[in-house]
Length: 625
Image 1 (cartoon, one colour):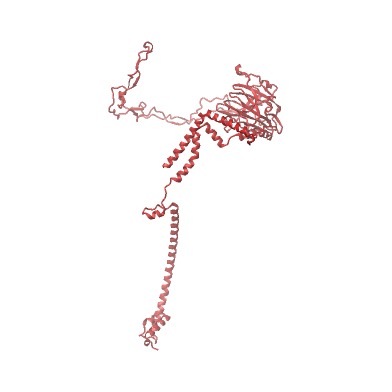
Image 2 (spheres, helix red, strand yellow):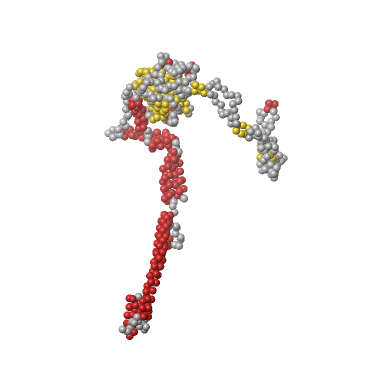
């Protein structure tokens, strides 16, 4: 136990020292800087004195090359020229908005991305915050929804995170009235797609405007919310690739970083649905006055019992209670504070007569209570409350009334919602409370391979460069500990804990005495190990089986022996009968000599002859020819 506590205290001490040393290092930051400057000066002196000394070659720099489309495209932009050529800044004003913020005067610039690992890679940056921003550009040719898919793809990096704002794009509908110089929030669009966030609501929009073939009006259709967690894409300050794939069979896919986060069908997964219902509730239908919607009603035949007392109180005084001894009836529970003083600015004309505040009576602290004693209240066993008749099934129940259905006068069926309004421009119309939102590498095309090649040459290169520049696991842990010194204690405990367990289990066990030591003393030996007991048990079971088999064999042999002994007795009786017959013949023969051993005649032939020879050898005179 002493070793365990010693190890535990040592680990805590090491963790505390590590944290303290880190704090001291932070406090002495100026000294460290001075030391490093001195070291740098020394290194420069050494380099000057040894110009021929070898130095490690510089790390190779990643050369950025602007992506080039590998197929037919309707729009492509990488901003690597460093200008906004082809883009038009809006000069419009928002309707129904104060003049101070109605203008689209937010600033756009082409810049390098902050902390970029690819020098020369530029993008479109929303520079200002808390302003309306609008910028747009024409497509090389209008996109018409026919037999080819639509693919729109671009990159976004929230360099400062995002508090409240969007980074979505609008595909502006081809109309005679389209004027990019006056692009604003009411400008008709065909599709809106991209990330948007305000508060803790993280969205990835896919909205298209569908034209009602009956009325000619447009209605926004919103895709269902994705099941994936989108928070990381807004908070990690990394470049993310957003892709929308819309197919002629009405299916769609939404991808982030080339991974599908949402998918569905324009006919089934939009809200509100593209096609209205065939029937609707009749707005003129009214519920009849005698319609009974009550599934249960009070029993009209029920009668209140005669002994039901509705006036009985729920609580009554406990008649068995007794006032505690020492109760101070004459002392009040609260008394005026004797130490209180009237404020100097107290005006009795304005504030009335001053009274000292009340405090708990100090005499009641040592007593069970003060003031007039009252019996405690208990539940009244006779309380029943107000009588109500029991509820029974309503025989006249007709169910919940609903208005009847009638054919929907506005019904239509559009089985090809993919055939949307053609669009001829792409635009960004945004309000953001966060600045420096980075956009890059827009492409609109019809072939998935073209979009993938464009992504690999742009976003893929950024991802590879960021991955190569990121520190390893150890580096990340060290960086985290620099920000949170208490992590040093966690690291030390994580490393030392397995060692502590090994020492604990290897060194804290009791030493078992050997067999020789038991032989020297009369101390009882410990029980054998469980596996030895199991082996002995198995051995005993085998022995019992062998004994049982031997007993069965002996019983069988015994039965056989009984049968054999019976047959043997019959044989012996037959032989005995023959011997008596031979003995009688022997005694009646002329050769029989009474002087001989009579027992010889009672034996079988061969035995009798041996018996007679033996008798003759003893006394030859007894044998007569």
